Structures are given as structure tokens and as C-alpha cells.
Image (cartoon, rainbow, N blue to C red; front, side, top):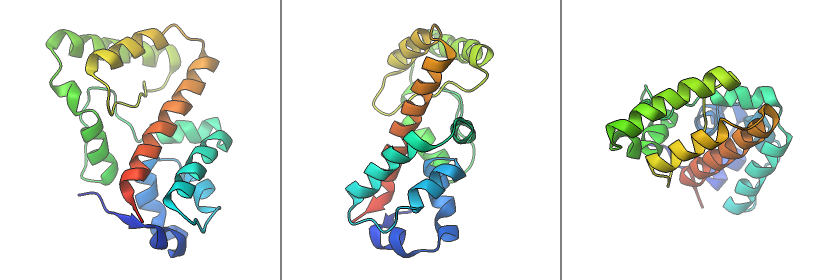
Length: 169
């Protein structure tokens, strides 16, 4: 079960005590530091707004670090941590996809990794397997600069959803 974190806990806990839970939202230590640097937060909305701002300022290498916390679309995340649990929930619809869609997603993941040298990342929550496949196919035609910006945006969306699920008032 995912741990809940109150706004008071976020504001008052030592940074080292928050690291693991925030790294489950986004596996980038740079993002965690950027978020925590703006404490205290008055509201959960302030935290979420700062989450968004942090993504605008973190480095490409921080984005690459964060990708390490995400399995391929269609692969089941290993482990019992909050990040693995969230990933399994976010990608649950892929397990029910027909065999053709699953096969095409696997092939698309390989093609994407060969083209961009990183895992294909998409906010899976709220998307059907067919939608994810269509996005994967579309994004394979993008140049690296455009695709890197898209990865950053998808990671921001995933992190924000996870942070929303983590925080309580």
C-alpha cells in the first residue's frame, strides 16, 4: 500500500527522511531537491505547482535519471515499493490488451529505444493500450529535441499524478 504524506509532514520532515517517498514519485534526486527547496508549502496545490516548476528547471540528465524508475510500457514493474505499485496500476490496461496490440507495443518499445536510446515514457493512466500504441508510433517520427521535450512533459504528468495520490491535506 502506498504511504500517504501530509502537507505538515512534507513541510517539517528532514529532507533525507522524505527522499525515498519522493523518489517513488520521480526517480530524480535533482527533482526531489528542487521540490524540497521551496518548502514550506501553504497548500497541496502549491506543492503541485512547484512540482511543475521543478520540471522546467531540471537538467536533461535528471530526466534520464528519472527514466530509470519506469519500465517499458507493457512490462510489469518489479518490486514492492510505491513506484512499482504505481507503475503496475498505471499500466494495468495493457495486460488486458489483445495479443496484436501487445506485440506491437513490444516491437515499438524496441524501435523507440534503438532510435532514442531511452525507454518510451508516456502517462499511461487514463489511456487505453491502443492510445499508447498510437502515441508511440507518432513519437517515433519526432526529432530528438522534440521527443526529449515530450518525455519531460510526460514525466511531469506522471509525477504530478503520483504526488497528488501521495499528499493529504
